[in-house]
Picture 1: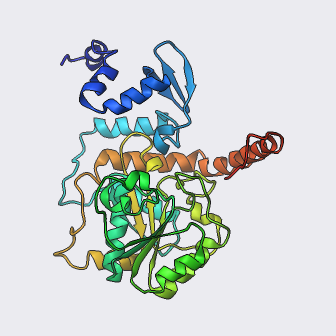
Picture 2: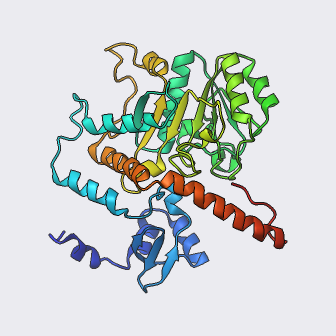
Picture 3: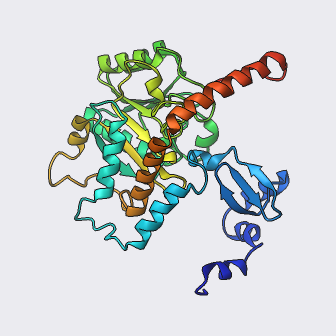
Length: 354
């Protein structure tokens, strides 16, 4: 490989689809070619992409939701470049890093006050896996309840909470003890919780796959049922959290909701370095890490690496400094109003949700 990495890379330009066809995922390549999306993108900035011909595209996929701050946000990029240039003592293991402590402090500042502990992960699905383990450990129960059409990730534990057979089929037996209930159905939820065998009820306030929103009052009532039957309430804010809905977390749109565990990721990365976080109560974390012997009984290799923590810290800083939560609320109201006008006059639009 040449010293100038991009000179070396330029020598291979144009090979990407053939390389993926041969070495990565041929079915995906065939799909892109079939629909005419086999472009060669050369630049990304904000909400836009440019291909090799200079054509500009508005990217509404946003990397499956990671680009809440836009692609290549200059403030996040600057902080990452500074951290990379400093040769910090990364992943010492027998150490407590300052960066992770600061990220935890910023995250808990925006969560309900009793949720003051954070565990860092590498992805959204890993936050759900962590929530499963924490809930089972804290309650001494195995049962897990989730909603139809839910999407909590694709690793084995989180896949067991997936409300779509499309993703579950062909992968064999998944995590036992899981039960699906209809979304927004309190009676069905209480029927399952009343067994007093359920460790956690896991729910997205806004479902990532359907964009369905919890009904007004549903989360507060679900929380009341969870408290009554000794079940932990886990809100999956991996996609809808960190300002996307005009609140720091989507569940904050409804008064009186105070979950036991919050899962967050995606936008926390700034679109640069994978990172996730589980925000929870001290009593839950203390049940897991209940002695010096078990202080790393749940862990991961890269969860608190300096680049991930710098990306998270920079992203939270940008969200605060640029008032992105407030901007999302303002723009959300504007978009909903305009879309409803279209829906009223267009027979091809059946519903507007948000």
